Image 1: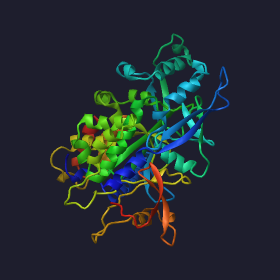
Image 2: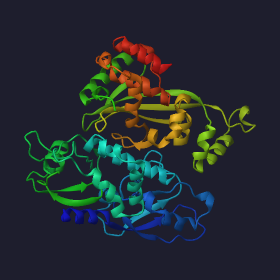
Image 3: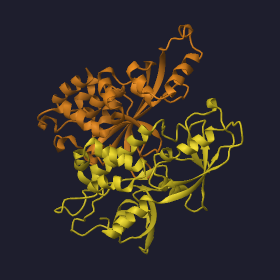
Image 4: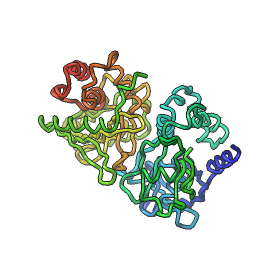
Length: 253
Length: 226
């Protein structure tokens, strides 16, 4: 279990050095310097970029500023994806720091969800947690929690408080001893090349014969094109926060 | 929470959609099934136009963000007929609605996705959508807007849509179906569900859909549409 906790901490504290540059067509009163920031992999762009917004708004007139949005090499970045996922999907092969362009005009309505307040991010985050628990526990664990527990999950994420977050999240990661695991594994497979944003299907952790399903089993079932024929290692995004190479026989439990 | 009868397997979802589309074709109601090219799953789709009054209900205004005022003023400045000259905030406008019905394997229910835009292409904002929710549902909406209708990414198209939350679906359906479920075993789940949740977001089903299933569901559809 100590190994697991180390992995959890590594995932939580993962950071991506990022350079934010104002889009050249934005109208400024003075030249805008780039802004550097270490972005937490597990968080969301609009949750952690208040300083970026303030920095660029200092050189712009109020009337030139509407909803902020971010773009990488022409692709609008979906703020509702965890930052680590965005980086792994779009920029993992390029040198650090990650260069993101900041916009304050011409919000791309067809590509991006609006994010007018932190409430929107909280609602999205909690919806993801709830859907995952619907798969793991038929929503029993999340529904039995009080509102203040839900708030603690969100505040833990917002304020980067590992212990506060995991005090509640560990309950969502448990299952009764008589079961051998979750009802279904909550997972999504993202590929940068498809119109479909992700693949998500019902998948049980235990096979009908009683043996544990592995990562390789899941990929074979759900996304066979991701597997190399020799069955060695493959790229996989775990919990949408952390890109690692895993052996295909990794148990999903 | 009520029993398994309120939940829908994916096979049954597809079958119900197929029957639903057949009836829609018979009465010219405009629904079609779209299959995705890559994984073979799909969704129901319908587009229609609505004339609506464009205004924001006063209660939601307080909860709105700064953009609302800008929206209202921007609207008043648009060139329009003479009734606008006085700066009136309410006017009739044509809105294009696109509704999609997708299947949620996580919640094992159908989910209603929709988007709306004015004829000039400008999409409606979440506030405008909240404002257009049917009066009977406004109280529930204002209790918890973020639990009811939010903007989300369409799971197949990857574009922003508004979504009526599936966890509330079971609540709505339970309220309508109430006690014994055995009458509804032969019911077209999509008809039942859509006639209940559709009106929340301006989507109404002609009564003839009730003929898809035994007479018990006519009463349900009547109640839902009244």
